[in-house]
Image (cartoon, one colour):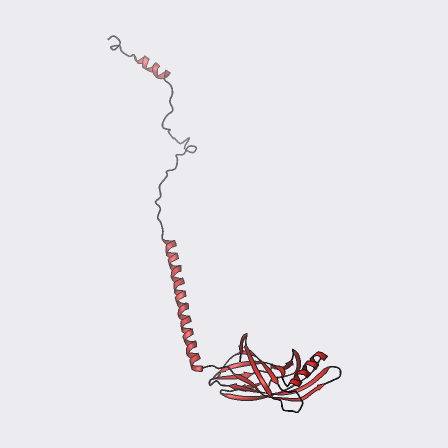
Length: 256
């Protein structure tokens, strides 16, 4: 009871405060002297994020463009195919037909040095059965007659224009001098005795196609004619026993 009723003297309180341990202060007072060195931390804010649909709309536009281009291409192809079909039916294009009508021998002379001089006259029948398509034959043409891969003579076709539904007889004079070995001479003599001499006539001609009055591009036409004749005697009628024709137009080969 005496302890509880004891009074605390002010001097005792001051002594206790001086001996109490020092604790760090929770606050720092700023003034003009230390404001430049001590700065409060910046205030952080949570900025809201917005999700944009820009990439999705861009991809959607690209897909629309691809679909439109594809549809346009399909429409163009269909229109072109329709026009070509109508044009094909209207024009009814047909290939020109070539036949060797006659084969004449003006000279066939063998020399002692195994050289051979020949002069042939070939008449080619060119038929154009088209009603709306014409042909123009250029100057840079060639005609070659060969026997067993050896050239006998050569010449050129004349340049001319063949109109619609026309048949033209082309007379070509072929001359040449070639080296003919003993082996080829013996083979030729054997063929002459049997009355079946195989020859190859090679024709190359640049031809421009004209549809009505419209001139199209020029194409190179190759015609190979495998002939079998009964003789090659000069100034004697030569009979064509068989013939086979092969046509080639810019890499397209047809055999008739």
